[in-house]
Amino acid sequence: MALVLIAASFTFGSSYAAASTSVGISMHVISSPTNSSVNGIPLLLTDVWNYVNVTIQPNPTEGVSLIAFYGNTVPSNRTPLNYYEWAYSESNNSWYDPIYGNYVNVSLSSVHGNEYSFVSGMYDKADVGTWTLEIFNGSNFIDQLEFDVSQPAIGLVVSAPAFDVVVEPFTNNAVNSSEFGELEMTKNSGSIPETVTFNFGASNSFISATLNNLTVQPGETVYHSITVYARNWSPQIINFSGTVTAEFTDQIQGQNYAQYVPDVQFPVNGAIYVGHEGYAIYALSNVTVQFRSSATAAYGEMDIIDIYLSGNGPVTVNVSSSALKVLFVSGGNENYTSSVSFVLSKGTETEVKIGFEPVEDRTTGWITAVVSIPGSPVSKSFVTKVSVTGIPGSAGHGGVASQDANFSSLMLSTTALVSALLAVILIRRTHGRAHIAQKGKKIPTRDTNARGRRDSVNRSERIKPRKNWER
Image (cartoon, rainbow, N blue to C red; front, side, top):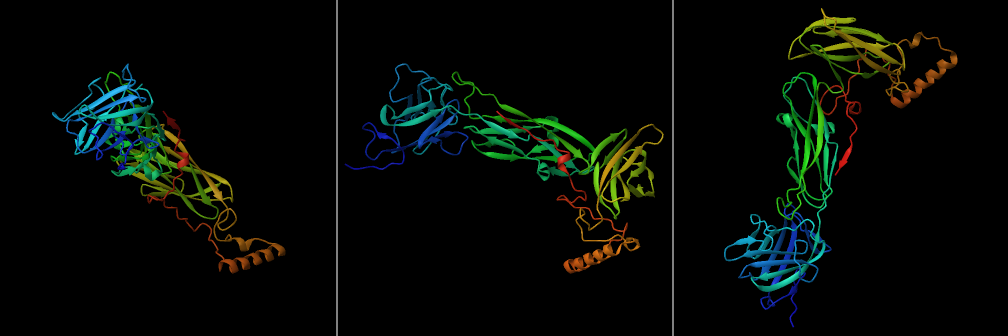
């Protein structure tokens, strides 16, 4: 007796299934590229459309019919809970459900050579477990095999559905939220594909999401970002909101025996900060002010704090300080020691520079800029807290060892002087030379971040902590 080896699990049937006949079968949800199985047994999910692909060699001559029933015995009381038939007519090239009329998708089913792709479904409450599938050529039995039926698991994890983006004022740049580490994670924790779409309502004209309208496979995780298309905005904060929607596109909709699962939606929100990174934005009548709430400076060095003003009309900035010495205030081509006045022009911004130096070592200083509009009672104080580090090069400052220019004028005891000389010798042997900083002459270079701006960003001050949602 000849032994025939075949790829799929099945048994031979009637006289049509000759020794040379082979049958193969695979199943998967229509939006999934991979076959579904449990321990090597094909798996069909209820309530969604599945491909039931049957390959028969040689080709059947009278069409193909499939009979599926729960267990291993055809039930006497046949209902959508335990019995289905799916058929293809060779004579008129048609697909149909001869029992219920609902569970064959005619438009998606197809035949390619000797492969018959039935797009079939089951009632969402059909019995789960092991089923039997019988394959017929017309009325002639070909083969039967087992497959599993399970209900689909629907799960979606969305984290950080909020975006904060910084856009330079008065530009038409396109800025992506990934530049600021702002990403939204979508994970399909269920067993059926889910199509994820973003909608920002009225903001759709200048906000778009990456990987929009993407089908996320079971177990797959994707990361979305948004792109903001600036429109020559003046400094301001533009809040926006929208939704991220998961649609289960493979489910059987509008049928007598299928339960429709509605789309799942999560809120999405965020803000577009039109301004300079690291600066707070404040609207004062017809003037918008951008200022830093905190800064760091080194004792013995001069530093600069910037304030950006935009709007239309005259404005005055008066500056005072505590534990700091203000050296100059400049803006609008004017340069003074404590205040400056100029006229703002619509569509531009003016940078006010405040030069200062600390007068105490390792302390906290304050710079207060009072912005007022001449001829009106409108005014507002903007305060910057300045943390002063030690002498450049000393412990707590982190630079090369240095000495104050007035060091030689100090009266040191003999012991202190010898200790200082030994320290200088040690420094010279370690570093090659000792650096003498000239007090008040050095203007430190500010850090340049990844986007080329002078001022670094402290995102932890601006961005709210995220939460996770799971449904």
